[in-house]
Length: 627
Image 1 (tube, rainbow, N blue to C red):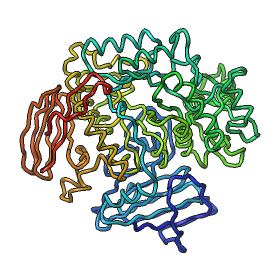
Image 2 (image 1 turned 135 degrees about the horizontal axis):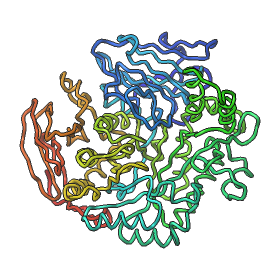
Image 3 (image 1 turned 180 degrees about the horizontal axis):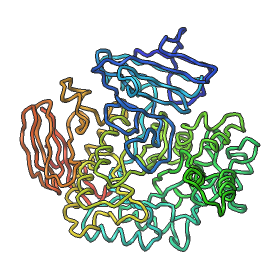
Image 4 (image 1 turned 180 degrees about the vertical axis):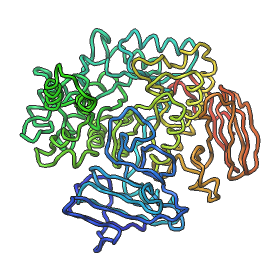
């Protein structure tokens, strides 16, 4: 590996990199430290043909050039074009062109990325601090650079095989009767199903590690009954602990000094779902262990998987800031407000959530480290602590992440929407996340916010069939979007059955990619260097065998696709191969029915298929045929 390590100041140990490297004696000229401003500036030239790959979970295309981004784990449910930061902070990118080089900035606080936005021929990076490790990775092309980077950050998390089955979720299925209704709906339609998710309403007043006994009487017995059917319940756990006298989890955390502090030395408090909460200091090993061990109260009841959420951390408001807003509005009570006074009053409340002043008042490691300076580590260290306590073969994935957390769990891409553009956004995030070590990944299929149409959900499923995490999830107040909820469910049955035919292949591929530090999803430009391949960002290579080109526009019965080499065009529907045709290199128009899953098999490659089943426990992974 050809890797240089440059150290600025005294960086906080993020544990992102697991291998030691000698530190270069001289920092290159393109890195400038301004101690007065408290920032590091990096300036890198861009050739007119250079492509920028990476940055993990971000908006925009596969090529990150021409936009601004920000690394600061953010609870933002509105993934619109102008957004610069989402839930993850993944500070690795590759400049690909005449010279192809990778860069990783190991810094746990905020970074601003100008990727040729203000000046087209320059990358300008601003690090909000003066302590960072910067790695420069040279190699023979993008695949080698990614492999070297993945080697130094450690082996990716590998989930159990059942976690590759189809999964159904909603905020919320509030009780046992509703869960039973959902399962019966799938059974009557004959649609495969492996898991049903429990969002926050399964808890007693939204308190972690509790069960609402009225909604789920004899929870352990119910979990076992569903497991007998081959269906697993997956509960959510949030980052904050309800501040409530007598609540045993809170009392233990307070007694043992496990919570983050404020600048006055008291336990830091802010509101999330249950009201005012305290926040475990996941940067402390003993607090991580304590919180992770709490999950065993649920695994002992038969739970085999978890999704962890709100761990950026998301803060609805702090008591101090809320009171400030109330006092401000009271000042103007009864007055004739002009527009600016009204906007100012309104903003006092809209700016309460995830306020940087609250993050700066939150302290780690017994008050020695400001949370704002290490903000991006919070969800990572939570995931680490949970993983290290759980039994092996437990499903675990998180919303917030930093490079390093890929060793402990997967991620989903958060609160997207039932928009056609978010199908394409889902596809574009996949290779960028793989570059940063995340293999068990997926989006909320069908979209979390807004209302999904039947057509949108089916077209989205034709992409999600290939993502390791295949979960249909939707929000409170939106229409039901279970696969049986749209009248005729036969089309959904056929598409989801294709997923089960592919599970042995997909599971083996993810396992291989984890063991060999490889990517599952790759841009065409990683393999082919012609102009159309380099510019393509609505098709992906999967492993060495497949190319996908999903339909992501409304009212389309097909699409144009570019083949960089001869490939075999295949369409599957249920147990049937509905189309198989060898196509030459070039541009083609393909028709895809709503009940078909299209993909392309590369020349001299083959894809194994098994027979579908109602869930993974009943899946015979013996290969039935090859495509």
